[in-house]
Length: 85
Image (tube, rainbow, N blue to C red; front, side, top):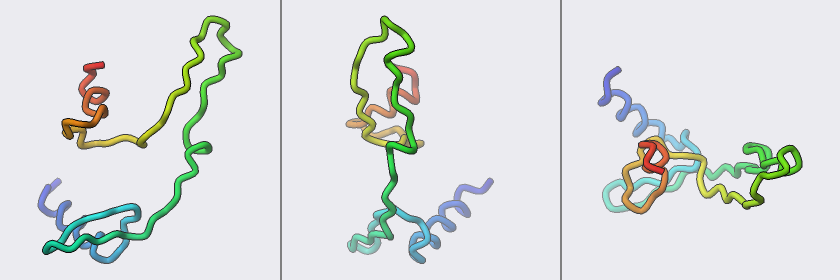
């Protein structure tokens, strides 16, 4: 695959508003595409504490659906991606 062609296609789709939940900057102006709400309770499963009697009851907070980039110094996704944690 050609990285430049992929980038050009993403830019084209973004400018047409065809990528939802996206913010980008062009020539100093910030653009936002249509926001689509995600029903997180139907998307991710919750733990069943009754199956294992010794399971620790910890509430897991999902703050993101993941990140393929994983290079921000403030983000934990890089640690998960690289297996640091």
